[in-house]
Image (tube, rainbow over all chains, first blue to last red):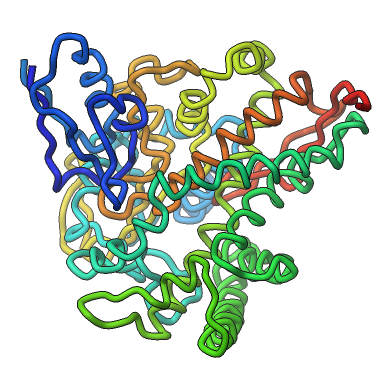
Length: 63
Length: 397
């Protein structure tokens, strides 16, 4: 699984890094920064949770 | 809708009354039967989640500029009423000041304040949650953060209400109050800024005054236009949220017990109650060109309300939208708006709401509305004038 961030869509709601800090982090503006792009099996669920909770649909999962 | 009424007035009152309704979900559910709720020739509201998202993400077509809503100000408020590309220069200064890490650092201070406020009523067995908690908590946090004297709170609340809830029924009555209040806000902050130039301090206002954008400091007017927005955005919305949350939990003991039993539910409960209550039921935009929403024409220059509360309970986009699930996942609500104008203070609001729910329920796990209470929600932004609660008094020691 891969996760992609559309930085132009991210507006810093912060849902992803709050819910899945193993996969997502905040930059100094509170916008999303990916900690990993290739998601190991044990973090797939966390990555999906982050993506599904983004109000801007800025995160895309590629299986 | 009353058939005798002028359709335009009836429409306006329907919009204003969303916040004041006992059940705003029922009002917006009916509105979503049409994609566009037309209030008058030059005023309409977008009702469905997908269309609201599209409008939030298209500030070139749905501008947040000063024409979108009259708040008595003579220059655009910063950053709310500035659209891209200029908008980003202000957000690059302000976003780091309100970023999650900065707000997380306030937790001990907020928890201390929450407990001091509870100390005042815990042993009495009753409180007015609105005046004794929902107003002082966020206002004290916010004034301390910006660096304004707490003794100015009453004046600042009066100024804020003069803009958000001016007396009068009609725009003709309200607009002069807004305009006059706005002038007082400018004068108040001109004085604050002048004093700061004499005696620099170390708080959020100082950081804004010292910030550089493209190699230049912000002008006094720019700082004024930021402070104006801070007062009307920072001194009302968390109060509204606390009123809505505690009124809900007072009437839903099962959900309250869920929080008491397992504090780890609190962060998702905050998100769900924000979705459900949507204390800011709508945000205002102005169309910059002729366009359409779901086949309904919208003309250039029209004021367009984006009904965030409606988006949040739109069951075509949110599964089980009409149920409250404190552990809802996913919950991609739009209670803080969306697109480039996403609420600057959202991380501060979340921090305050989480700490408030946690500390309050540790000390007062069981409470209900005082007998005979009829909740009267305010129009515009959803809050209460009073929220009387009764509970078992806390024991000494």
